[in-house]
View 1 (cartoon, one colour):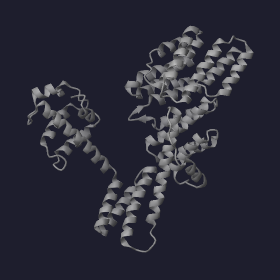
View 2 (spheres, helix red, strand yellow):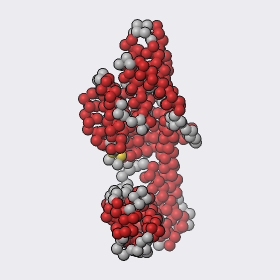
View 3 (cartoon, helix red, strand yellow):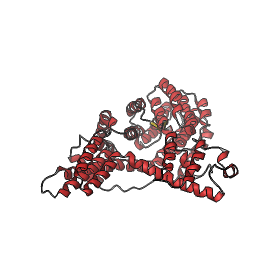
View 4 (cartoon, one colour):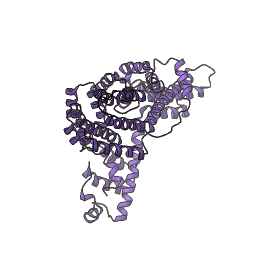
Length: 472
């Protein structure tokens, strides 16, 4: 029973939600089967984890539940019915938490009933409710569109041959909602194409970007911010879009929910990472400052946890700018915020990075060997660092073995994009060539340096160029 859908759903409920669901089942409006309430109140005693032998079917059948006559088939029916009610409860809660949508249903009903007094009263309440909405994102425009649509329906019923602004406002807010949402999705589609092997269709992108280029939406940061993000993808070499994006984030990011603001900053951070990977090292400081802003505002926490990938990126850039003390403190302090199932892996890998930066290669390798390659991006970084450590220690045989194993992994992987594969294959190719060039062979080293700089799309390009320079 512990592995049933019922228990899995209930494990996600807070104490307050469990109490409210019990009240939901107790209401004859929602549930007329009293057996369900008796059964639920019995198993609720074992919240929040529900991990007890008392919930095994054999135990329930032998001990019984007061007021119920149970057999195995009956338990199955009851559990299935409660699951159905849980889904109804979730739908009910979500519907009534959207206050503006609820007001719009009322307005629509009062309009059909032609009860104008009630319509006017509810309209005032709806407008007050909308004013209190804390964000100015696509959801806000959608709510405005819904409200103006109901006002226009009311005006249309009056059959007055006069101008009313509600129709224009409904159309305008629909446009704003569409543009903000379309831009947001377009950014994510392009971003995913860069990360994984996939092929998305981006319709109307040329028309929309041209419209935004020719029009002014300065009063709508949800459009201007996503437009700048989109242009950092489409015009990657034009740094003005990035500059404008960071200015807009500084000024307007508080107008968005934390998760959306976090994603907006992530796009700016990823732009810096792309630039750094292409050899433009000045963006390291920009990236570090962006991360520190997000840490200060606690934007990086999701459900109270810090993403292990964000954690890794922050350590990486902090070391790039050479702030060892800050990095050491960050790892020790913020690793506790990572979800326990990722925590050890993240701590071991990132502390290995710190040790590597301090030229403590043996210690770094020992810690790195404790990292499990369960996440593909941690796996890529761990393999890369392992090769770099072997190079630093002049361990050529294990390095060659690691190079070959990495090549096989990249060749067989079906989820990584070709761009990612190329980036890491170039690292492997150039590291192999560098290890075979004799020290002081300036001609070959100059040729290799030129080739690396010309290629640009190379993982750890700065480390490679540094090692070439050391051999000259």
